[in-house]
Length: 134
Image 1 (spheres, rainbow, N blue to C red):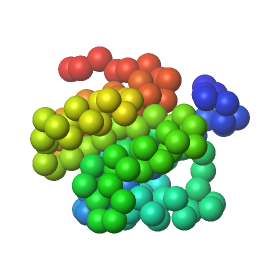
Image 2 (cartoon, rainbow, N blue to C red; image 1 turned 90 degrees about the vertical axis):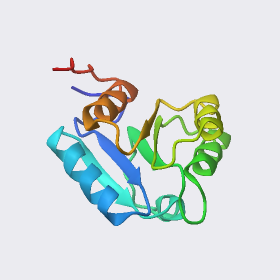
Image 3 (spheres, rainbow, N blue to C red; image 1 turned 180 degrees about the vertical axis):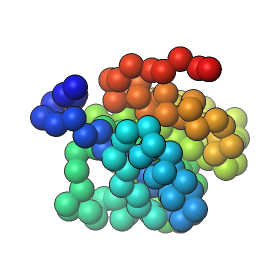
């Protein structure tokens, strides 16, 4: 299935988190679900990657060293980058959640939420069918 005008079947998902273990675990989860993950330790690393693929979805940690996930989303919106964003966080705060939802994210999850919930948000953001919960 071709999607979002990429001309191929590979679904690229960027994971931006300064916790290496989170990047590893999300990478495994995404590969198992049939996605091609590309991980970055910072928002700046994503922006500086001139060879990055066209991503179908970004999974951004809210609290990053340097530029936050929210600031990265704002910058992408300012340059009219339509890539959907799913936020993840270890510290769920009502004010931050409201800000994330207001900036037009495709999902907002705590890092302890079920992986299938995050995958379904990514599938939906990438224009794929969402799997039923078992």
